[in-house]
Image 1 (cartoon, rainbow, N blue to C red):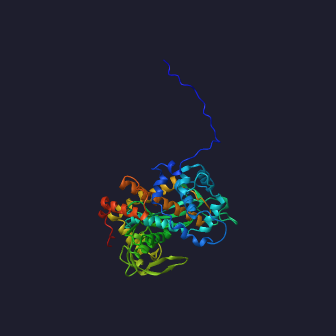
Image 2: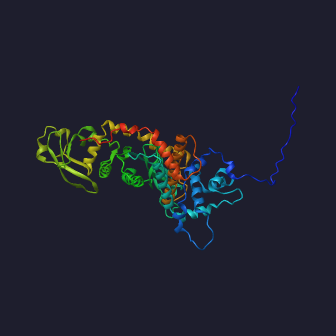
Image 3: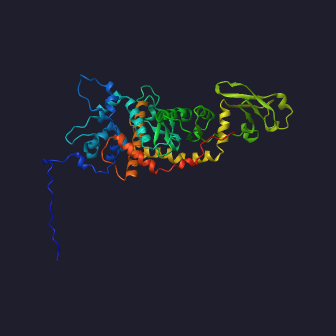
Length: 451
């Protein structure tokens, strides 16, 4: 026998009037926006932007918290253009729920959002990022002993033919080197990440032509301000391995874990390298392989961070090693003013604890950049100008931190607790976290080596 089924055609009656349940019922309990919303506390926003609005006259504004939620949504979903963001919000029930707009409410216009961003500046986004750090710290997700620092490039939203030109639409963008050897206009985000749970604790944005190694201390200072404590060690790649950075961090009581630059051979290896000379920092002299002293004879013209050391002519004249040292009347060295600090960094880089800490760097900070670019839109600037790019970076950093916080709730509770004040949730997570966390970092020796 055949199981007969009658073919039918559905009548799509688009004009039908129906009553719908609240948006709340359309968003699944495990939706990513629900998870983030549980740890999101934007109660500070209205007071933070109070001075940006008139309080007693003018046309009504878009709720500032809605504005922040829209920009957060842009970072959460990695949507590059505001127009596209608003098109998505128009039709996506979860997006509408997240910003608190019902189906019959009109979404703000893209030009309105751009004007509001200009009105806000970056201060309110600074506070949002700072609060994401504070929540993670209160939840026990931040240890604060070891920070990892690195920089990544962000492609500017501008044609490369218009960079640095008169009337450029992005006067702050500069050419920099991108992966694959390409030279493109852009920016750099320099980031400090805590070692324990990959929480971002410091962000700094510079133009792409600047060397990140020259501003390492500033991003760590920002992180120190957020955390209220000084880290014991800062791990960074070889771009940061200079004597100047070592000296900067020594002055702050921080151990720099960064491979020092290799000593280049002199004249194709025919002559002794600088590292073949022993430096006595207390006397500020070098001793050559034959025992003669090279004394500081002043700076190098046009190179304010270099110092020149020279041996006596009489010491070099009858030296049996002169052929391996110089063809001139005496040997001279041009070294950094921070050579003593660089020498200590080289000695420290040969210790086991240095190598153990450095191995932890790449999975933490480079993983952060990969996540931010792949899923949250850090690969290309959404807007033009240094301040707008900084806002983008702060938003994405805050979103990544809130993701860590939401994941911690689920990991330790097995679910997201019912809606309660954020501080109550934080205290609950902190108590649970302290019960089960294992202090693996105690096995790492943080003390700098003695030279």
